[in-house]
Image (cartoon, rainbow, N blue to C red; front, side, top):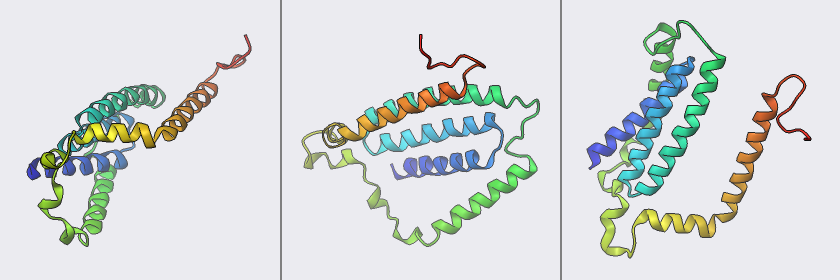
Length: 173
């Protein structure tokens, strides 16, 4: 199980490097999809399949919208790929930075600390992800309400910024 988790974490870091180093929205959106998939795989390995599925569906729906807008605004006939000169240089710098930041932390990682929540099943009454959902709604209810209002405000700001010449999307009827 630790090999699968190591692969998922490696893919997560490489996807983040691919997103950070690429100026083209096409390849950056593909990197974000890889990051979402790897992150959800990490969540599944730690015992959160329901949260992982919800995150994957919502995140990919949002990424579809972001990709459509960015592809429409930045229509390049020949976008820079991951293996072009400047992008490869940025990827090398980011990989060097990740290795440099990870070397001091390397001695503190052990395979025993990567135990998923479901392997401690004899110590709990219910699954780890169900308990997390219950805690999120009981103690984090106000944060969910605030997040919903922020998302609504963001939607209204984006709609107002992309309005036509004389008619706004939020107007008196």
